Length: 309
Image (cartoon, rainbow, N blue to C red; front, top):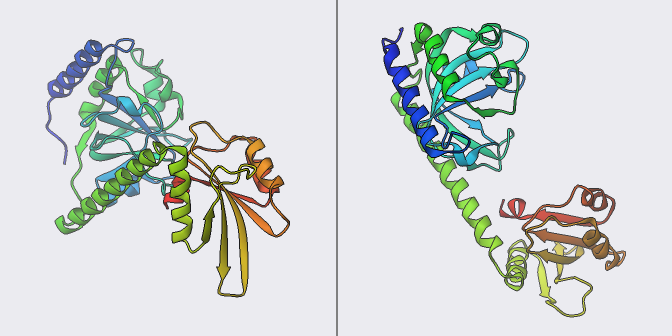
């Protein structure tokens, strides 16, 4: 059914957002009340997703510190086939990490509230003298982008005659189960992030002991060599495979905030005998130059997010 929400209510919401943004600063803006979230049909069928449930999440790699609960989202479909704004949604969570997502590490939960029918198509948006210069309307700009207050007000004006309120296609039980699943996923993501922060705050020696404990739990027999004259090796581990063979592994634990360079991998490789493997466990990432060295060597790399899995 068509919504009966008056135009004034949309305009007043945008006006309040404008006042809040201007009061907070940041080149005139603080927390942004309106966003464009973009959807690529080649990667995600947003229309099928909305038909299945009003609840969803979106990849939000940028502006995470500015996203706030109850912010408004203009969902823009990009690509060559009738690109434009098709839905209005509301943000229902702050950004959080999900290491299992194929779309990106950071995501934000949203609730679809309205379908815009007919949609606000790209040619009409670009031809509008008030908002045509807004760059995200021209095409894909990186998943999520803030919408300036004047653009948000104009979008509300254009969308008002075409708004259709969305109702849930699922039973209350299905919606409840979905909400439970999302709550569990958000909780797990929070715990994951807290563990990462706690591990990153360990002293280097404590991080070495942590790595020793993890390897022990994985079935290795581990000897902690510590800070002896070990050419950088922090532990030596042996994994026996059902009594048939043993994998000898030299381990380096790097509780670093900066990326691990290729030099560290080469040094570990130089400390290995022909029958040994190398393992580097780090709280950081590896530099781009380090990855080819890892792939060419008999050393394995673990970053903390993978280790926590």
